[in-house]
Amino acid sequence: MPKTKFTLPGLSEETAAKVVAILQDRLVSYSDLHLTLKHVHWNVVGPNFIAVHEMIDPQVDAVRLFADAAAERIAALGASPKGTPGAIVSGRTWDDYGLGRDTVQHHLEALDKVYDGVIESNRKEMDELEDLDLVTQDMLIEHTEALEQFHWFIRAHLENAAGAIPA
Ligand SMILES: [Fe+2]
Image (cartoon, rainbow, N blue to C red; front, top):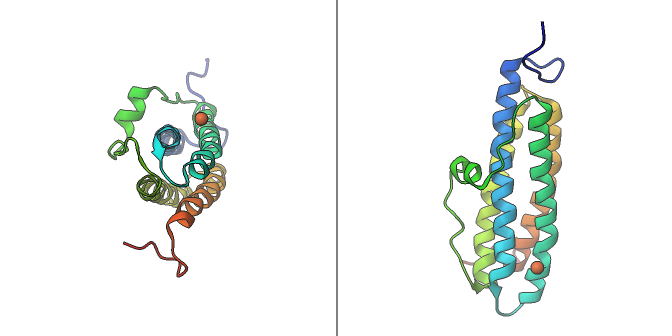
């Protein structure tokens, strides 16, 4: 009899479905993030424009690769990654990025919150993966390390010498 379903050897279909749901959630999150970062790259103005404009593109490139990795792992698990704009919008649980053309300060404050949300979700899902699939967890750990560095790049523009972001 032909196999109608495939998932990774050694993984139950039930576990695979949970891992796929986590990866789809990361695909939505990463897709939203790299599009939002590009939007900031285009819309940021004012003093330090070029520093922030140029800082953002390597983040876009990296996050696009994270989205690709999440999507391809969904496929490797035997499921279909949903990467259309409609799937991204319907799959997300947060509001669209609120700023248009605006200052470096305002965009960095907003991006600080964007990274807060993405990293918090990654950590929550890394915890869930502890009992589901360590290979996917390892992938998210690698992504999170980079995202936390990018978050620091953002915060370093906003912090004072005490390491705090003034209100
Ligand atoms: Fe550009």
